[in-house]
Image 1 (cartoon, rainbow, N blue to C red):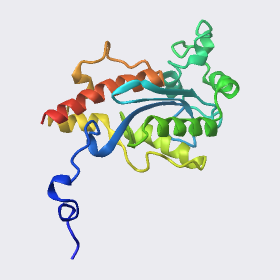
Image 2: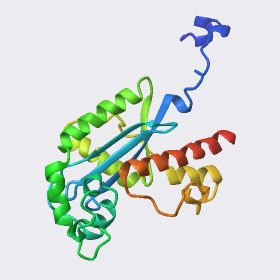
Image 3: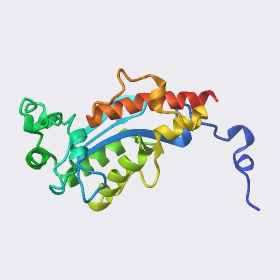
Image 4: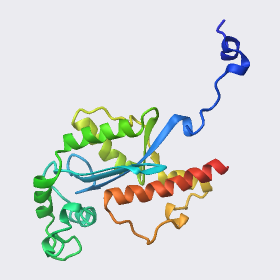
Length: 223
């Protein structure tokens, strides 16, 4: 017969929860991506931002060379809003995603010159993840997880890099709806945004998501 932990160690020696470890030794990582379209492979990840939930000073940001020159113009008008490589060029209408004369192809050409190679970016991202979550299981948190998580998983797999997140992931809005028991709730209801729209800089949005997710976890802990 198998012996219980209490029998082997003695009841008073059974290890209890480790202070500060939280949800099953998880460490949540808020992730946001900006892309040239709706699906990876056909379209490219333009930028990737991430930070550790509960410690937003641990952060990662990269702008990537595109896989190809395919784009959806509506997606580019959003995904290019926060690109650092465009900051010096926004006075030129063709590089300004808010302009009627915006030329998305020129942004992809610029990223082809100035962005990180996507395989290098994902290797560096993996190293940052492992270092920043040492001793914990990294869990991606995003809004929506189906979009950001899809691109992250595809890029790791396409470049034959082990995905530290595995198959785990949390949708921030879904967790909030569960926490407040309201299927129609939105994370915006927390009132933690200075305005109604995100900046669409991948790092800034990841940090905003992290702040909101911390509040969701606080609500969950209070129940």
